[in-house]
Image (cartoon, rainbow, N blue to C red; front, top):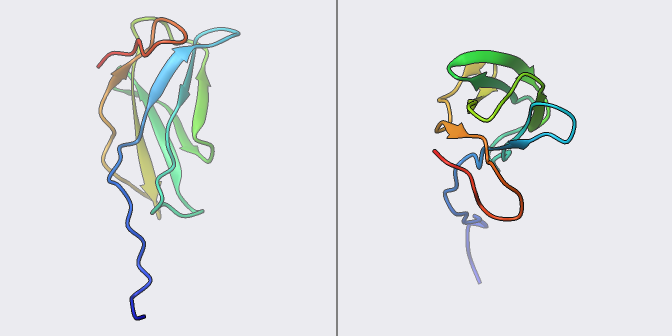
Length: 101
C-alpha cells in the first residue's frame, strides 16, 4: 500500500472566546492551530488597541475587560504579525453559547 503519509485536517478558525473572569475582568482564550510551531507568540487586542504582546500561552486574563469589550488575537510568526482573528464580544452567560460577534 503506497501513500504520502499526509494528514488531512479541517479548516478551523482561531476559536477566540471571552467570558467573565472568576476574579475580575474577562478571561480570553483561543486555539493554537496545528500548523503553528513552538516559536509562535500571540498579540491580543481589545476594542482595536493592543493589550498584550508576545504571549506564549493561548489564554489571558484581561482585568480591565467588561461586558462591552471586543477582542481579536493575532499569531506572531518569526517576528511578523499574521492576520487578526474575527472580532468577538464577551460571552454574557454560562453553560450556553451566549457569545456574540
